[in-house]
Length: 49
Image (cartoon, one colour):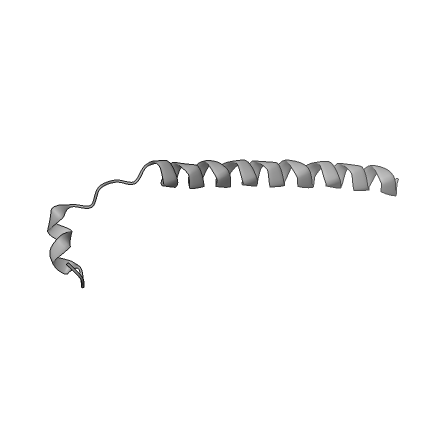
């Protein structure tokens, strides 16, 4: 009985972690590959020019 519960709990944990890691990896790679250009008007707010 405890073995079945442990196996189903382990499978559920693996499923949740795989889903989380896939979503996290996809969002991180999306941010790295696409960085929008900053508007030129923001240059006047920089401390260094």
